[in-house]
Length: 466
Image (cartoon, rainbow, N blue to C red; front, side):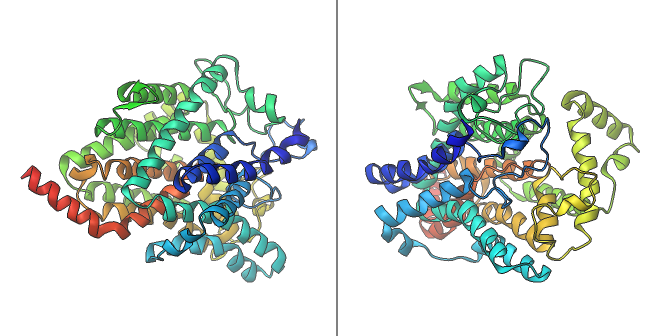
């Protein structure tokens, strides 16, 4: 079965071409991005890792490593060929923006890091090409097809549909354990990590890790809940919007990925409070504080656990986390602490290699995406990566006050901006990123280009409200 994985992966190219032939390019792009990510195998893993209980060195598909043929790369190739073959005029619609600089810098990070470390041109160009296909192409698809209210509505509904499509599969794995990936595609490196929970099992389905499934369900649930809350999800697949949102929220909770569930409810609460208060500055202030803490933590300026244990509240939080998350949170923090010390030995551009951590983390790679990037591409890569999440959210927040997030032309964008925020927050301690949300980032940034039309709509809405 593992031998068939490359065939399954590359078969997505003709599937995507068929979608572009039969459907509007916008719908085809959404189906290819989300369908490919949810149902394709991650990669053809080497035979010698199948007997290892925890092959920690296998990297996530969102970063270049020794596994170059992954679903991230194949989906990118498929989208490029689909646009070139069936919608070649789409490229002329692209208008660069200053907000595009983070994704450009991110895709060029391997070249800058390679030059700084004296690495061979072939390897660094290959790594840069990988990021272009895995991140740049979905982002560009967002700029081309999802950068107006109608396009973001298509993407939001596609995210909801992807969540619903996973419900029966999650139910199966909740009952009997994560078996679907191995049944269809063979060995899965992380299917048993955190599998056993207090109630049933944590599903994985066809994603890279149970944590990634957790944040996918949380993002889908947040999107559905906000669309329903704003009145934009009356019925979906024949079901009332309230039922759709409830099912997705319930499945997110049942997945028992504690961090993802916390992010889901924190995201919904923050959006509702901002809408009721009519101001975005509390969200911005919280974001700045969190970013400062992450930056300080990345620089090893303080020991998070030691600082928490100095107060009664901190000790309560640490103890509760240990009990609920089965020591996972504490283990990841300890690994991150050791890895950051190695990463900061070359702070500017990192080491330019995916396995930079082998030199000093006692045989364990860091688990958070931001730490992996810090060691690979240094602070240059770290700032570019953070910018890929912050710039689209900043662009969206700059479009108008939160009271309009319930309006038909803003609700899908607001839902996706909230989902993008929790996906980015999850990357602090988890490495498996949902790359379809690179399209969400591109769409939100492109929406700023429609500011004039949006402003006219808001003025009409204000007249009606007044």
